[in-house]
Amino acid sequence: MHSREPATATRQRTGPGARRAGLAFLLALAAVCAALIIGSPAAAQGQTTIPLPKIEVGLDAARNPKDVSVTLQVLLLLTVLTLAPSIVIMTTAFTRIVIVLSILRSAMGLPSVPPNQVLVGLALMLTLFVMRPTFEQINEEALQPYFANRMTFQDAADRAIRPLRAFMIRQTYTRDMQFFVNLAKLKKPPVTQDDVPLTVVVPAFVTSELKTAFIIGFYIYLPFLIIDMVVASTLMSMGMMMLPPTMISLPAKLLLFVLANGWTLLLGSLAQGFR
Image (cartoon, rainbow, N blue to C red; front, side, top):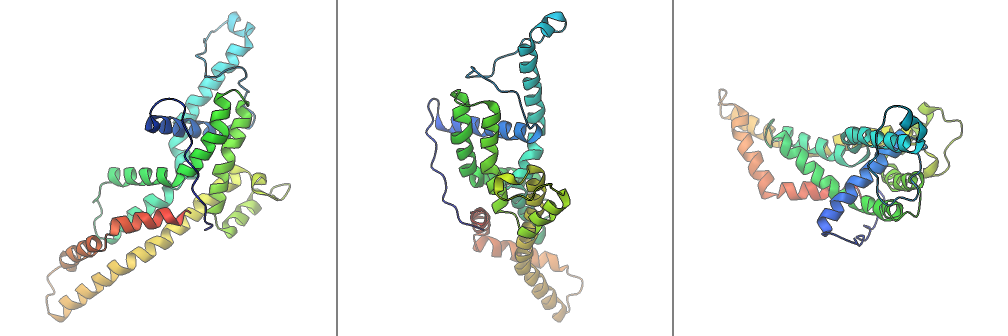
């Protein structure tokens, strides 16, 4: 993994900082999702905010193509928001984090503790920490100029995709990227990062994230597996055949994980692994 300095926080103009950061994240996600689905969206010129369209059916709507275009943009935005969870899973650090946390839960012998809601929420919050430099770059280079009416929607979408594409390529194995490049049968081999289409970057990134998550999960399993083997061997040597080994090994694994400050150590290692 290549090291990268975190981007400086973007100064917000109005409103509290936390609310503005959350709004920037949602708008950045909507812009990236729209760019993933369409290649040439209609440009929004002369507008600082998205207007509420007047949906008309009949001759009046046909006589005003501009209203029809804005209506289609709103419908497209609603469609993108519906697909937003899937796109977040496929283009951010969420996949690796949630898989590692699930493997940790299985290695400790607790199939339902912590609950799925807790694991998903923790993975989502850690994903926001990891992706914050990328989202801030998208907000600074794409969203703010677009809201200031200094560029069209298509240019803003192209600029929003670049930091996200760069992040995914940094976390992708070369073999996986080459495999999907060959599978896509591109007419022209990509020379730079911008030449690689998202249809190649996204599956290569997801495949690499799965591979990395399983490698991390293997190293997580080792200490807990050793504890299970030691407890089972001890019970066998003492002739305690009827006592389940998990009854003894589970408290030992929990104690070891707590004494080693396991949650902080694991989450910190996951966050540093993306830099």
